[in-house]
Image 1 (cartoon, rainbow, N blue to C red):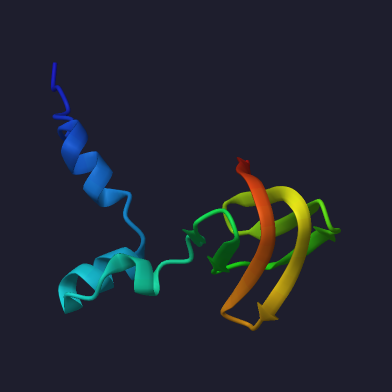
Image 2 (cartoon, rainbow, N blue to C red):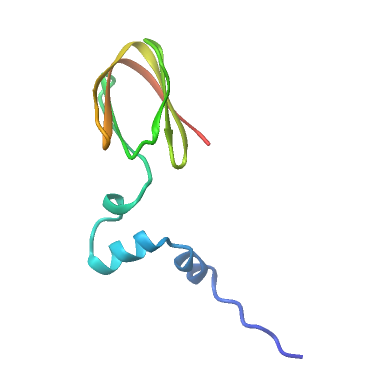
Length: 103
């Protein structure tokens, strides 16, 4: 009987990396620069910057839902407004209570 040798779990994880992640590693570029994962930066409870988004699903003074490649980002609070919106990111400000990730 011939047994097939299975690679260790750590090797499987390395194999599951995307081409972008592999390229970033080879070129010594931080992975967050080339990945399509959303990056969320919170400045206190007054401002949130969301990068790598796909679109806005819902917008009101109390909730903003943003679509990303990895699910929906829901930001809740009061008196929320969009300060700036570009193809790279969205800046939201107001009295922010919560940031949720909905997969």
